[in-house]
Image (cartoon, rainbow, N blue to C red):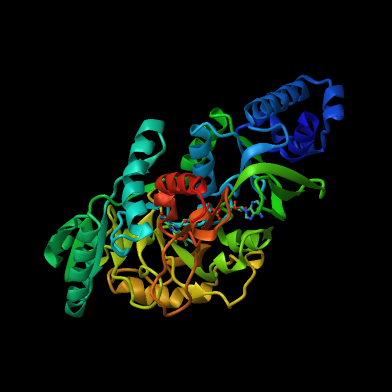
Length: 455
Ligand SMILES: Cc1cc2nc3c(=O)[nH]c(=O)nc-3n(C[C@H](O)[C@H](O)[C@H](O)COP(=O)(O)OP(=O)(O)OC[C@H]3O[C@@H](n4cnc5c(N)ncnc54)[C@H](O)[C@@H]3O)c2cc1C
């Protein structure tokens, strides 16, 4: 059985960013026999690492029949945080990622904002996990040198008619334990001369972070705690009904399929979580929530645009992030201004619903320049100095949503045995914003629900 585990994992392990020695293409082709025949120092180093990983896995397993105790599917920020949490709780964890590296899908296509927790209904998972996640993320960033900045955020009302909505937002935030500071239009003009509004709320706990560094640190801690990562390892199906879960995993390098056996499975496949769940025999299809996809497009500022965006054509600089009020019924937060860690200004994301039934494997992430027009109108409502021609298409991300256009936003779905009836299985669905902010407590919740008995 040890050989079986060795074979499975040797076929899958490759190209991990942490395992620098593994970065040579073709390593996935190594079988145990080929590895033994290898002669160069680098390959010996690679071989030693792999054998070390295998020994570590096989000695910590509850049964020799298993390749790992828990398989986590998907190495986005959520899968990484869960894999780390489980490894820190002493479980032997195999992290299976279809792509060549971690965080290459939605987790690298977002605004990198540490949300304060203003918008979400009191008591919802989004509200609770966002507020807890924000605090956990700042502490994590401090402790592990993950670059982040507590810039704050201005929520601006651009007409008297919006003032009641501003009040409602303040009350909703307070219900979530988030205090916002009211500012007059004149106070905002002092703080941010380029911004025009009649009143605003300042959220002092909103910030930004370098999400790649965050994920790299989660991955480092996961592997340090004994976890193993397989990149290019796409889960194509399996069975989860019994005490031993079996996953069919396709090696993207060789095209070969292997079967892995584990005692527990966590499905954190992001936009593909519903498809992965549907491919797992033993999980009741009725427990899989619907999936609607809402693309969010971003635009950046052309070089030199800031030089004239202040009052009377003066230079502008932005410190807090600037958000208009959410537009009711649009499923977005309004066309807002965020900053990246190098002070780059970006606008968006907007909301572009993808046609019902769109396969998340076929998403076109291109940003159409034609979408700039509504951006100009929305941004000029609070930044009248935005010059013509300043907006350039940047990138896009896609939100997995449980409800479609025009309906009130849904909550995160973290389904364990108590929710779907299958022991040793947790599925995370529709982890849209604020999933990045919420990643650490989301991981704790998933790890706890995984171990609950069915209802
Ligand atoms: C436009 C936009 C803006 C956002 N802005 C913010 C923000 O500012 N702040 C915030 O807190 N949140 C934000 N979010 C939300 C945040 O980005 C997501 O909640 C988070 O990235 C989701 O992470 P994930 O791990 O669930 O998904 P992903 O990052 O998509 O990871 C899923 C992984 O699973 C892998 N996978 C899929 N199928 C398989 C398979 N069959 N086998 C193996 N692996 C598989 C994929 O390759 C991928 O790496 C935003 C989201 C969007 C779309």
